Amino acid sequence: MSLSYKTAGESHGPELVSIIEGIPAGLSVSARDIDRDLARRQLGHGRGGRMKIEKDQVIISSGVRNGLTLGSPVGLRIVNADWRNWTEVMAVEADGKDATAEPVTVPRPGHADLPGIQKFGFRDMRNVLERASARETASRVAVGALARKLLAEFTVQVFSHVVRIGEAGAAVTPGMTAEDLSAADESPVRCLDRGAADDMVREIDRARENGESLGGVFEVVALGLVPGLGSSASGPERLGGRIGGALMSIPAIKGAEIGDGFQLARRPGSQAHDEIFFDPDRGYYRRTNRAGGLEGGMTNGEILLARACMKPIPTLTRPLRSIDINSGAGVPAHKERSDVCAVPAAAVVGEAMVAIELARVMLEKFGGDSLDDMRVSFNAYRERLEASWPRP
Image (cartoon, rainbow, N blue to C red; front, side, top):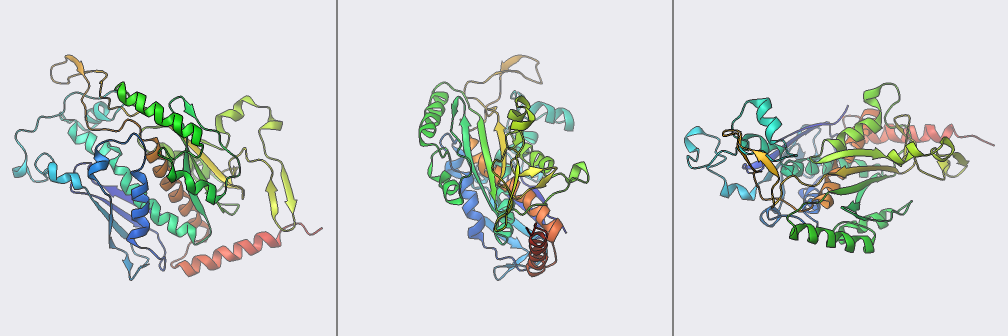
């Protein structure tokens, strides 16, 4: 058994839709669980006007009865409040089309606009940018909330925090606890370093004044993972590749790393790897975590650390130069309502994507038709691991 999902819906369409398969029967789920993460996705200094319109709440339309999953596909819906302002422009039926709506013919550098119309043969970039919008990530956060609920049954917790916005970087403390990490939402930029958070807010304010946008770096942290999730048997099964791909699938993410990542390329081997120790009560452990909790494509029992780099949002209030695809004239790029900085929100999406991948590997290793079946398999595995420890 594994976890799979599909999302659908346009940024200014009636709603966003998700269908999730593979969630075992018997998992306790409520709309409140999902709404919590949807609200967190809307946090962050530097967000745009759309966040004043949308107050995302999920409608669970299938797969759950009396608060428990049924083992059948789970359907989730998120209504777009802004749809009321776009009912004619985004009409489904041809007879409802707004004849006055001007097609978008000027692509934004750094966005999906131009390659999208080249791929599909459109002359109106509205047909591309609506789905390419980061609004779609609300659906993924909803799916991730389900994955998070499943992981919590096995004491796995997933957090995120921002470590850089523009030139403002934060000091990262190794070995942070769940209590430490849960404080990120108290910061206006979801940064755990208060001094750096103040610098980040100032960076965002300056960018807004200058008509600019800002990117940054966030870290996702997973606690409580058993060793052996993922596989070294083939490339597609390696968990690092799966997490890296999941993070890179988020709009505007241009880089991902596990553990110390690119820094390891500058170090000799003696300073790049994590020495192995053993304690009869604790089992195998490392005193450092340069590998970020993954070795050979598998979890090693340490904290999982993944980081992602987000580029500045392509929509600027002082647009870059572009070309009108009809006239060929050089003109300023198309403007859509947008954020100055969405790194804090992207971190919450990153949490969701990592949670989905971890839920997948958990289901692949321990999955059954019901949550009870999964617990039996998980507990047997834990017992086998402890039975294999050295007995001095």
